[in-house]
Image (cartoon, rainbow over all chains, first blue to last red; front, side, top):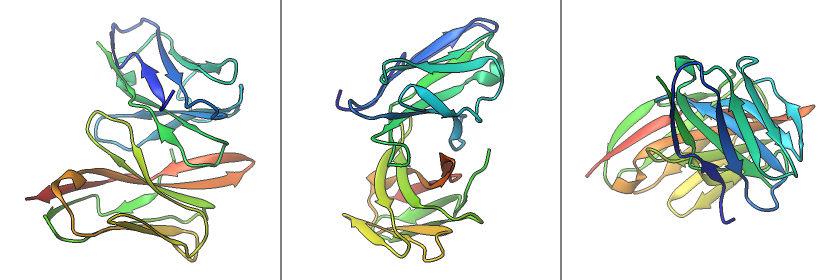
Length: 113
Length: 112
């Protein structure tokens, strides 16, 4: 596609439920990144993929968070047993190669009640 | 997580004024990126800098990669109301894996 797309754009869930967030990177981009942004805050790195492998998972805040990328394209970020503190905007970005400039999607706003 | 020091945190300026913001770090970066984020949207890339000392312009925007590789600044000339938003710097470093470290953001408000 023309840009990075993310779905859903908004997700409201109950505490304890699992959620899946999806990211479609720019076609041909080999690197894909996930960030979390709390209200009025900066970007918190979560994980990135180069191809299908994840060289850096250091930003995942707990073992309730996981991500996968298959076929070197679409990625899914899964949050299990959601907590209220997980409420934030989850941003995905892609770049041609790791280390290049990143292009961001519009984000998924997650609200955990 | 690790973040860059970005200043000012916020600023109100009059339309037509020039704006300057900067990012500093104790670490060396290979690349500096500047982004603008509007409410409810993802950050949009404004300028990318790849070499120490590099000065790059994009319309009314000018950014420089500091000689020490530890800082960068962004200038906006003749500000207009649509410049309002949050501006983020990001430094990219490679030490085994690539790391993108984002600044804390500068909130810009332009008074017409």
